[in-house]
Structure formats: structure tokens, C-alpha cells
Image (cartoon, rainbow, N blue to C red; front, side, top):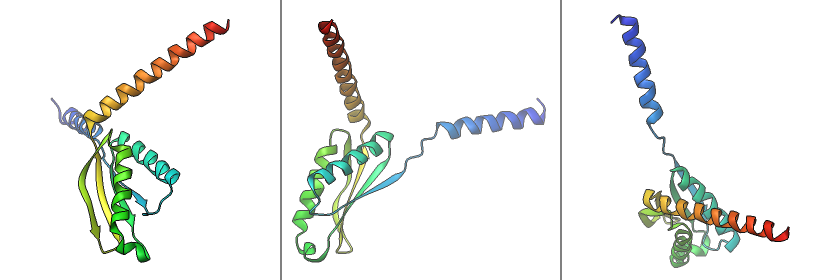
Length: 140
């Protein structure tokens, strides 16, 4: 084997190894203790997208003014946020007060939960498609 072929093969193997690596990113979602219901749902929907892509999430809840004395409101909001994502995520770091202003919690995707979630999602879509076909036949 000549040196040129050796270099080519080595470069090709390194490229394959690099393609197989997954690049996990850390994303951040910021909340406040008195966030509205719809705003919380929008944030959780975005977080769900990140988790399904395989990214980790840092959930930061900023306490301002008199809210600093009411950490229980912040913890309740974080708990409510996690309840919307518990079907695909798990907590890696429990909610903890940082710099007397932020409550931080880390989430990461759980592969088994995600597989189950996607399976249920696909079965629901198939049921809807069958119902749509049946409705179309009934109209004719």
C-alpha cells in the first residue's frame, strides 16, 4: 500500500467517525414566577422541540424584587413546567437557588420515554388518518 492511499483511508475513517458523533447542545429557557399559563405552554413547547432533538435544557427562573422572598412560587412554577415535559425528560439537577436571584434546574432527554412518546404519537396520527378516510367515504 502506498502512502497516498494510506492517507486517503485514514482521512475517510476520521470523517466517518466525525459524522457518527452527536453534537449535544445546552439550551436555556427563562421563566418568571408569575408567568401566564399560555406563555408557560409556549416555553414548554419550545423546550419539547429541543429535547426531541436531543439537547439538554437549563431552566432558569428569575426572581425579582419581592419575589425573592417567595421562593415557593418559583419552585411551583418550575414543577408545573416539568410536569408538561415529564413524558420525555428527566431532571439531572434539582431546582437550586443561584446568586439569590435565579432558581436553576437542568433537564435532559430520556431515550426510553422519547421512544414511547413517538410511538404513541405515530399511533394517534394513524388513527386520525383512518378516521379521516372513513369520514370521506361516508360523505360519498
